[in-house]
Length: 186
Image 1 (cartoon, one colour):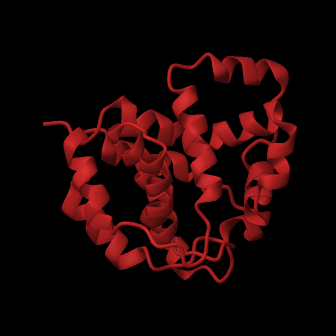
Image 2: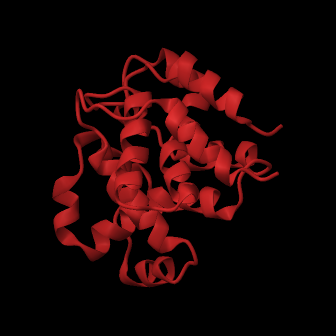
């Protein structure tokens, strides 16, 4: 099965209003803010789309819809960065999928290479960092930096952390789905 744009829109409509774990925004607000930050930075359509869809895995995990706490508060690493990838493979190429896959490791990398980055993390991001393997050691950071999509994943991660502003107005989902349509596989 491949997710198409109507199905992605349906997921956001049905599940996007849920709180983004431990943050003052919903899942949809977070996704839209991340995509908007990418667009404002002049990112490619593929990277704007990755920014929009980077946490789609959270929307696909049915159990998230009924949790009384965030997964990290329950000690769960949901590995959300991998959940949507098989469903996006038929719709988008690596320029969209790889930054999504690598955005969690990008957080671990940034914590290793920019010591002030850890202080910018929200409490939920700090908890998830520990569950996701913690700060990378020097060897892991070098290996990560050498990956083809590492730079895009780092940019995505920076927007990800900044996309938690309560009440921030962004373009609507339809605006970013139009961007996604431009980079969909035919």
